[in-house]
Length: 278
Length: 254
Image 1 (cartoon, chains in turn orange, blue):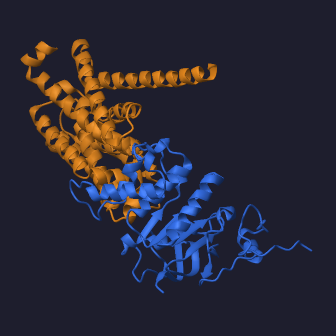
Image 2 (cartoon, helix red, strand yellow; image 1 turned 180 degrees about the horizontal axis):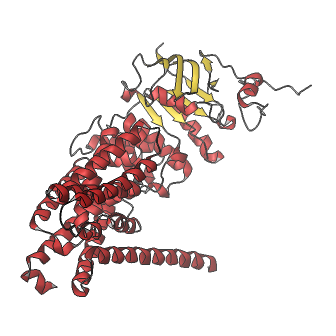
Image 3 (cartoon, one colour; image 1 turned 180 degrees about the vertical axis):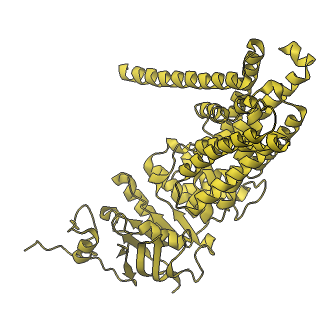
């Protein structure tokens, strides 16, 4: 793979894409897991499929459509949730399926042969283009910049939203901003892992990092490192065995999470036993 | 004398259901008021109305003559800690520091040397400065409660509001928390709400009862008739150190 990396542009793109994806999924993944927004992220990701379909139908870059759809889904879910009266998981479920349905309708309306949309659904890191890289670069930079710039406010908001709003932090703004950040992250991750597999990349590295770190900042850094580990080795496996990259990366990260989880549980049991036998 | 809280005919409705109605309450600066009432009696709603977190249906709330929420640095709030996520990756010191955040949102905000000093000072005030670097999941219930009090104190409030401050802490911690509140009461007004009559220590100078309705103008007014109305059955008012001076001995049923 090292050789191919120097020889082929698409391999370089793939490597850059996986590094960018790991950075955003580490940073936002930790927030998503702590704020219990995993299903919300799933809803935002799946709504993006409607945008992919619209992009194909109207002839613009599908990833732009995905971006527009996921941001509007994030804002839509956020507004309805804040106004209250409806359970948020109901809204998420509705956006989730309506987004997918719209995608299917748009692609059916398209004249001519249907395009190969499986790379959007399951991700194909080897087909990442230069334009994709530029979009990913801008979005990742924005996501990381916004998280770092407001880090203390994020921490207060995530830990105790009520108190944060009492001391005058604009929590409603932060909530919408967070949903938009999730939408941007989802768009970055779509090319790598695909709409359907995005959730694993958001959760596995940060859940694993939570077993190792007790500080928000270091947990994000550890999650980024795990993400890179999964993405790059998944890319290597997918290159060598010629299987879809998204699936490789997802299976690898979930497997690693469960292995570390089992090791942690076994260690706790062993410790308990050793205390008892003493 | 300055009036800390002035509530006139307050009613708060959630949708069509009334959480509290006809609440009149005057709290003078320097008071230590306990508000008791059963679960669902609207205690948290009243606190949220005082903090300006929920819209008021009718009536008025004034905190030091201002509308709630307009006078943020005057009020310190200690939430019910049982409802908080204790596994969140944050240290005790970082929790207290969040109380020093400025209003609004400033980019790349950093805690100043002064912020750090104030936060550490408050940790020392509640007696857990040695735990500053601990992650919050490693604190006991009593320690975590004191941490939340320290966070509320970082804004240098004139009024401290506490929601069930002694729920699910042991008797020892409860005593410590109340003696600490007594100390704090010298500098600030304290209002706490609880459903647990046993949680009211003799440090609490005045009591008011809230069950959807409340009328209180500074006189202690708890007797077995009111308790019966509040809780629907006679409660043993003399149990476990409830202050005798407030509560009359309850008569045996004839």
